Amino acid sequence: MKTAILNKGKEDKYFNQYPLIEEEDIFRSHNLKEGDLFYLMTSTDVYIATCYVGRQHKGLGWVLSYDKDEQINRTFFHNKFELALEERQYFYHIDGTNAFRLFNGEGDGVGGLTIDNYDGHLLIQWYSEGIYAFRDDVINAIKSVFNYRSIYEKTRFKNDNIHSGFVLGESAEFPIVIEENHTFYNVDLDEGRMTGIFLDQKEVRKKLRDYYSYERKVLNLFSYTGAFSVIAAKEAVETTSVDLANRSRTLTEENFGINAIDPNTQKIFVMDTFDFYKYALRHNLKYDTIVIDPPSFARNKKKTFSVMKDYNKLIKGALDILAYNGSLILSTNHSMYSLKAFKNMAKRVLDEAGVDYNVDEVMGLPKDFKTHPHYKPSKYLKVIFITVKH
Ligand code: SAH
Image (cartoon, rainbow, N blue to C red; front, side):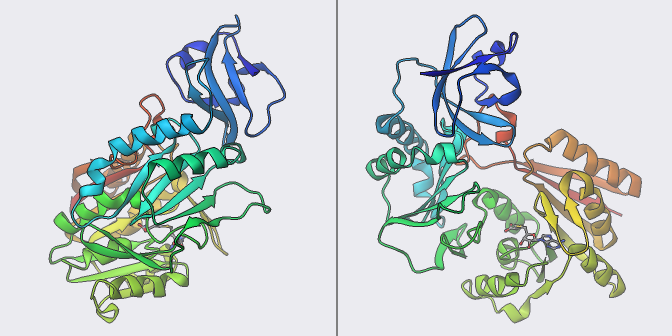
């Protein structure tokens, strides 16, 4: 077995079950290639864990087992999936919801691998070539543990020779319609990086509908397929969706359509958010609820946007068009932006603006997105609900 030996003093972190092997903590190792298994050892040659090489960000790979004798094979994945399935039983029995995460990377014991269930159509996501090297064992284990109509896969690493798409089963006609919180959404598992819906926001969508939409004008920024707009529209006076991408208009209209909401009764702008702020100011538009859920980084012709640097500008712009007693729903999925820093940034902007406000609620990931207790970045989703009295 190959080994990687830690720098002196680094062993406590890994004995305490930190699951990601950080390159900078390694003193010396065999020539480690993607998909290799290796023992993580202390500088005094004591075994800590069995790991695989799968490079992601600053990680060299992930811990798979703390038992030196445990083999990493189909049975290993089978056991992990069985446990995950047991913990997801509740999600199979929610009235009005048929899509959720079945297996969440390091939270379920295998970093770099996720499996989602979209009404019986499963989507595997491979985050590194390393985890992809275990593809046969993983797929065989999935077949023996989960019920499914079909299996699809997406690679989240760069390799032009490896293709995403259909794996096996009864192939679906996309878009399929999934249901969540008694609301319908189009999903395509075979097209691009995204599927049409971000399953990790389901509780936020529900909260938006139940507490922040009734008789309100709701503005959804970075709206993508309009998931927040569609659920809000069930209660709201009117929704407005803003997204830079051309495709967002049709996708949003279609999502309204499958929920029996006439898209012509709602507003959709294909526009940069900051340009929309100017437009709304010029036309004296005001909104009672503003949802801000941007990508962590974005580049368009004119400029780049980074959540860490520019979120404050998003809040400032929103405050200018927020109605009296209006609410902001601020979301980020940047794993390196801590909740504390995110909250402090929001408070600073609101204080500087001199407004009275209340932090109503802070939300994170739903339970099916099981997180790792010793690895903070696994709690990547942070959503803050704020009500402002100007
Ligand atoms: N909030 C969405 C997901 C957002 S995905 C949801 O809950 O489903 C990010 C989206 O931001 C993409 O659709 C992208 O087109 C859009 N986007 C990126 N930069 C933008 C900008 N400057 N202004 C408006 N939309 C932008």
